Length: 582
Image (cartoon, rainbow, N blue to C red; front, side, top):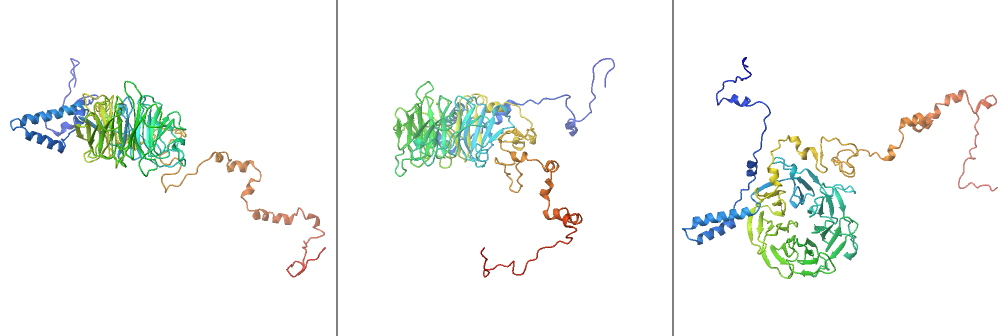
C-alpha cells in the first residue's frame, strides 16, 4: 500500500504468532539471496579425532606412576601438551578422505606443483584427481584410465598398478609400472606417450635383450634429467630408459645373485635413484629378493656394483621400501623381515640403526617408506593402519597416528610444495593429511571453497565415460574419438553383452559395392542371376511350338519330328562284349 504524499512504501504483513508454523512458508526477504560458506567451520569438520594408542597410554601411565603423587596432575598436563606440540610439528591435524577405487590403493603420485593427484590400485585403474576443480561435496575423480584397457590387440586384460610417479622436473608425464614386462610413459591426461619394448625371453644372456623379459616390479625417475628413468624387473636386471627411445634400453644392469640354487638370478624388488641437492654424483640403490642390497654409481659404469651387502635383509622376503635422503648420504630400507634399517652410502657395509616394524610386503609388495622433503623425518605405514613418523637419526617414532585402524596402510608420500601427507590403504581409501597453518593449497584449497549443490545426474561416474572423460550429453561427431574405447563394445568392436547380437562391420570393400537397384537398372539381363533356368526356358515352349525359329524349314517336309531309334543290343556294353578293332 502506498502513501499519496511521499514516495515511501510500506508492506502490510500478516499478523502471526512467533511460533506459528505458517512462518516457515512466508518469505523473509525479497530478491536473490546469496549463501556464503563458513570456511572455518568446513575446515574444522575435517579435524581428526585421534585417540592415543594403547601402547602409548601404558607407557605414559607407567611414567606417571613412577613420579610422586603430588606432581601427577602437572605431569599429565605436561605430557598432553608435549603430545600436542609433537602433533603440531607435522601436517596431520586434519584430513580429507577419497574413496574412488574398488580395491586396495597401491601407489600415489602428485605432480611437482601439487595440482593433480593420481592413485593406482589393484583394480588395474588410475584415478585422476584435480584439486582446483573439487569442492567439499564433490570429492571425486574426474577421470579413470586403464593402461592396458585399449591396447591394439583388442584384449581387455588388466594388470595391477605397481607404481606410478610423476617426473621430478615436469608434471606433463608420469611413469606407469604394472604387473607386466612393459612399462609406460603416460601424459598427465592419461594418454600413452611411450611403451617400452619387451625383451626376447629365449635369450639366456640378459645383456643381449632389449627390454625386460619378466614382470616389472617398480621404477623411478632420474634425479636431475627428466629424459631418463630406471625400472626393476623380476628378470634380475635394472634397465635405464630414454623416454624418447622405446625400442631398446639405454643401459642394462644385470645383477648376479650369489644365493645357492638360484642360477645367478633373483628378483629386483625395489630401486631408488638419488643425488645430493647441492650437486654431486647420483647413486642407484636396489634391493633383491635374496636379501641383497646393491649400490651403483648413477653415471656408470654398471658392469659391477660399487658396493654390495649380501644379507641386508632376510632372504626370500620382499624388501619393497627404499629411499635416499636429500643429501644423497643416507639410505633407509623397509624389509619383509619386519625391520627398518638405516645405511650410510660412504660406509656401505653394516646398518647404522635397525628397528622392528610390522611389515605388509607379504600381502602388498608395493609397501614403501619415504623421507620427508627436507629429510628431517621418515614416514611409513604399518599393518595396523597407523602412520609412523620416525626420527631419521635413530629411527625412533616421533609421532604415531591411526589412519585406518585395523586395515594395512600400504603407501605414503609427503609432498614438498603442499606440505601434506598422502596415504593409501587396503580398504581403497586415500587420505590427505594437512595442517591449515602449515599446509598450502591441495586439500586446504578444496575445503576453502563453498559446497557445490549438484543434482544426482551430475555425478560423473553416472553420466560420464570415466575412461575418456566425455560427458553423457556431449555431442561427438562420428570418428572423432579415434582409438578411444567405446562403452558398449570392446576395443576389437565386439559387444560386451554376450546376449546382444553382433552388428555387421561395414568394411571399405562393402562401401565400394553398388547396390541392387543400380545393377538392375543399368546392367542388361541382370535379372537372370536370380531366375530359375528351367522356368525361364518353359515360358517360351508355347511360342516355339507355334512359330518355330530354327525348325521352320522342315515344317512341310517333316511335320512330325523323328528321333533315331537304337536296337536293344546296340547301346549295351559289358565286360563280355569284345570291341572291334579298326
